Length: 236
Ligand code: BV8
Image 1 (cartoon, rainbow, N blue to C red):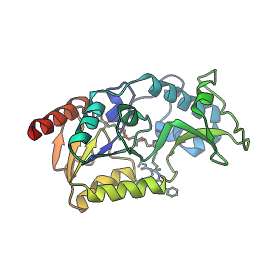
Image 2: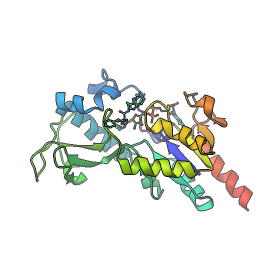
Image 3: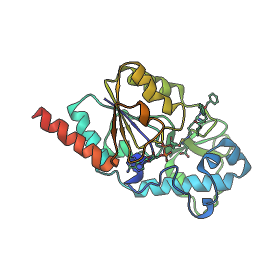
């Protein structure tokens, strides 16, 4: 079983989905415009301040019952998580070997040398909502969040791993994604071409809905615990 998750997986933990309106200073921005190298170049303090706020926010929330259900399920069936999310909640809940397609809000590095910057240095930054990115101690270039921006390529290793495990999957649970962002949105089709059954767990229909075997129109925090309970009951 492969579980492909998007921002909707974190909604019930209180992390706004990517499509939810941005608030405060960023209210007038489209996240797809802000999550780009061009925006960072044009206004580094605006973009860096947005990521710093999001990093602080995800450290303040906890994985909900749906995350814990996936950890239980992984004890009953071979299960691999591939996520588009950058909030680190799968790992926080105890899921192992999570494939993070779009990087992480908990990792910062410099723009020139890719030198990692300790999260503690980032969290020690004061001020806001606009925060000028600090400079790398090694090469002096501005520090950026360790996420994949629109227009940037995904890590080849992560993408290759995601392709390999979805090609082997019997079932792919597609949870909480609007199925709009590529190449992640191509993974369910890749799995189906290799014989996988697709289950979509999402209260709303998406462009993927017409291609799935089962639509499960419930929130992740309801559906995943129900699934784990059903598998457990079947095994006992
Ligand atoms: C790349 C990190 C190439 C940053 C993110 C092919 C076709 C068309 C376009 C493209 C293409 N290839 C590339 C593109 C361009 C672009 C793209 O796909 N654009 C889209 C908008 C058309 N893709 C890229 O730029 C990618 N790069 O391909 O590079 C390349 C190659 C070589 C050299 C140079 C370049 C990079 C994409 C990664 C962007 N970074 N995140 C950050 O977070 O700030 S993507 C970001 O948006 C998220 O990580 C997430 O992946 C995505 C948001 O989507 P979702 O996760 O689905 O979330 P969303 O809010 O949309 O939906 C939430 C869903 O949950 C809803 O359906 C809702 O109903 C549901 N829901 C709500 N509550 C619940 C729920 N479900 C269950 N339970 C609930 N409780």
